[in-house]
Length: 107
Image (tube, rainbow, N blue to C red):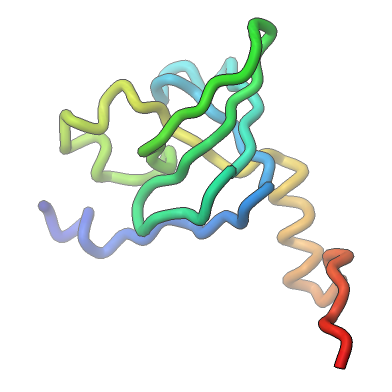
């Protein structure tokens, strides 16, 4: 593992976040819609990916900016993800103090 790989940390999505998925980074210009379906790991996520042909589940999907998938061959073929534009917009609003619609626990 290179120093670049060990210093990089994956952006942390939440369950239900909309993401873009591609089988490989070279096809990210034609992404499919994915949803994060389980708590993310340290370096990969599990996605339900929607296509015109149905839904498939992909595990071990690395973020497109992760330097590790480029260096470790066993990650090739599992696909890459990035936040969908709508998710990026919601996250930007939340950073500015807007609420995300979740209710606070009742005390």
